[in-house]
Image (cartoon, rainbow, N blue to C red; front, top):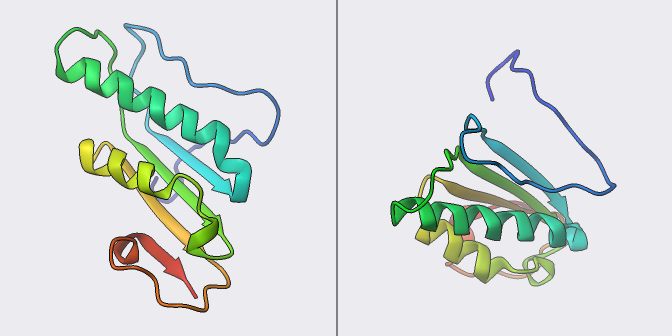
Amino acid sequence: CTLDSEVALRVGGDFFFDPQPGDSPVNLVLIAGGVGINPLFSILLHIADLHGCQESKGNRHKLGTAKLYYSAKNTSELLFKKNILGLMKAFPGKITCCFHVTQQRSQICKELQPHVTGK
């Protein structure tokens, strides 16, 4: 987003991402904290599946990018972090993530360091 961009937010409740062939591409910003990552991780997996089908030319979906912002007390509480890193590696520039930790006391592993902000 840029300054003065219009965004839509949804907090809680039942939600999903189910783009249909022919829909205009959308860029998603997903924001999660702690175990709130569960439904958003499912959305990321769905996006990865659609990107994978698109790359094999068997998919008419037009996809934008997905950016995940995910916060926890420390990196050990970041659920699915290795899976998320794998998705970012498999779909560079299409799926990205920024982890934020609020109470990390130990050294952050080198694999996560480029993607972690916070203490």
